[in-house]
Length: 442
Image (cartoon, rainbow, N blue to C red; front, side):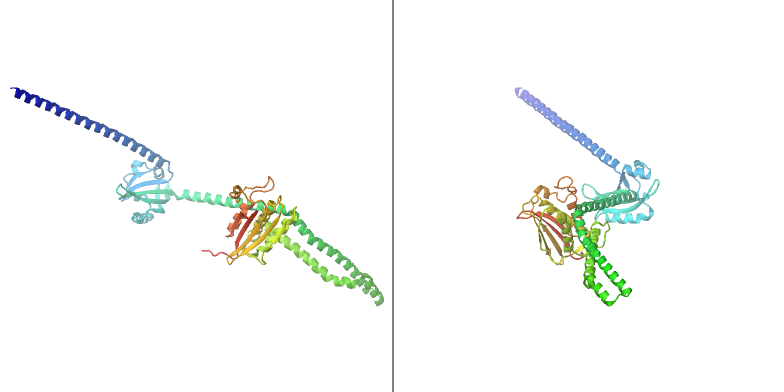
C-alpha cells in the first residue's frame, strides 16, 4: 500500500516538472517572438526611412531617373520623367522603355544594353517622346545588381541636352568675361608700371631730342651762310670777293661738319624711334605673334627706364651674354622684367648695400634670366602668397599687388617658369625661364 502511494507521489511530481518545463519553453518562445517582432518593426522603420530618403532625393533631381529590368521593363521612375512625358509613375511602371525611345535610337539603345555588363555607359545620346515633342537626353547607364552580384536590370540617369547646352553657353560666356577682365587687369598693371616710369622715359626722350634740336640749329646757321654765298655767286661777285666771303663765313668748316651733323641727327631720330617703339610694344593691347627676340635688349631697356627714375644709387652687376635669345612676346616679357627689376630695387631702398645682379643661364632648350638683390629677402609668410592677386608688401598707394600675379600668368602662357626665392648670402633672387624656340605641340 505504501509502495503504491509512493509511486503515485513520484508520478505527480514528475508531471508537475513536465508542466513547468513546458511553460518555460513557451515563455522562451514568446520572448523570442516578441524580440523578432521588435526587430521586424525596427527594420520596417528603417526601410520606410530609407524609402523616404530615396524618394526625396529622386523628387529633388532635375535629371531623369529610370530603373528597368534586363528586358527594359520600367520598374521605377522619378518626378522629372513623369513631368517630361506627362504620365504618372503608376502608369509608367510595367511598360517597356523602348516605347518611349524614338525609333532612330532604339537600335543604339539595344547595343549599349549588351555592352552594359562589361562597363557603365557614359554620355550616350538618345531621344525620348515627351509630352511636348522629342527630347534629346545625354544618358549615363549602369547595371543594377542583386545581393549575389547578378545583373537584374539597369539604372539610367539622363539630362536634357538643352540644359547642357545652356550650361555650356553660360560657362563660355563666363570664361570670355573672365578673359576680358584678365586682359583689363594686365593692361591696368601695364599702365601703372608705365606711370612709374614716365619720368625716366621723358628724360630718355629728352636727350636725343635735344641733340637733334641742337644739330638743326647749327644746320640752320650753315644754311644761312651757304644761301648768302650762293646769292653772291648768282650776282656775279668776283673771285676775290667770293674767296674772302668764303673765308669770312668759314664755309669750308661748315661743309665738313654737314655729314657729321646729318649723321648725328639721324642717330638721335633713330634713338627716339627705338624708345617710341619700346613704349608702343610695352603698352600695346594687341597680341602679336610669338617670335625670337633679344631678352638682353629687353632687360637693358627696362633697366634704363627704371634707373632714370630711381632716387638712390644702385650698383649694377651686368653679366648678361650678348645676344640672349628667347621665344615669345617681347612686349609681354618686357612687362615681366620691369616688374622683377622694380621689385628688386624697391626692396633695397633701406639697405646699406644696394647691388643688383643680372645674369643668365643658357641651355639648348631655353634661357633663364636671374635677377638678384641685396635687400632684406622674403619672409616665409610672404613667400607662400607672393604670386596671389592683390597681395603686396608695399605701402598703400605704392603697388597694386598684381605685378607678380600677372607676371606669373604671362610666363605660364609662354611655357616658361617664374620663381622668387631667398639667396643664402641674403637678399632675394628671381628666376625667369623662357624657351628659346617654339615648343613642340603634341
